[in-house]
Length: 378
Ligand SMILES: *Cc1c(COP(=O)(O)O)cnc(C)c1O
Image (cartoon, rainbow, N blue to C red; front, top):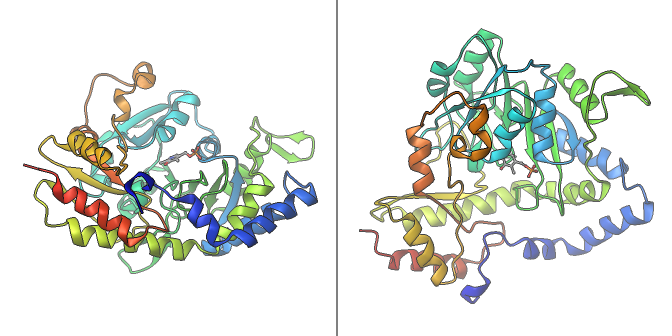
């Protein structure tokens, strides 16, 4: 393996491992010509529901639509407030603005990168109608106290589970549940590089509530209760049959894929833990971690230098995310006033995500680790 070939995510090798089955499944859809709502959409949806201990699963066109549809199912009014972490992908907050609601941005924990009940509590007002915790980089937000906070006040919880499908959270009584299935609704993305990714765009809503399941299903399908009878203003958001066929095959391997990511993460941990100036990822005690990203914190203002150093040696790395969302131009007109969230701010200068995927050769990982060790962190 030459350094030029190192990728953040290697989707081709993953495809090669299931190629005959995958090619056949795609060809079967083409030959059926049932490109919309074909058999694979039903069978994948039901397989994902089984995987998630019988949660309702409603497929849709992408993870951003999933967030929008879940929010629409709450029937909120203009300027109702929705709590969202400032340290996340833009989609989580974008849909709040798109629906004329007010995003209230909260800070995150510097070690788990996720928000907490303590950080949310001071931001609650009479107008708070929803909280959207994000299970960032592949581990669950500490949900229990957030769910209690929300329940006491009649606030809805929508989990943005685009990065953590397959992760599990354990409650204080020892029971556990999948991310995306604990709040009123959950949303996920099947973008190709996500942990369960298709070969184009795709997404889904998840819930354990029958009423929300019906409502989201209706909204995703033009607000239609039966054909040509429309109850609410909805949208058109569908998972293509070809993408469902791809996902049905990949879902069978999801646990194995998560294991492979955890192996890669453990190897990075073991080899990078001692380096001064570097903080390796922290796994919360009550969550598993499926490592959508393996994200370091680089101290002493050295993050950009390390990124450039790695690039010089053929090692790609990514900054998720370079700006807290309240600093994005797009949000300026709908945010309360000038404020800053110190941890989100700090993380935006420190985080660096390393290559991690399901088919990482050990020589590649050794090369990445050796390269990092050559860098001067002082
Ligand atoms: C990827 C992602 C989304 C959006 O998913 P798309 O399928 O690209 O629309 C939303 N939230 C988070 C946290 C994501 O990582």
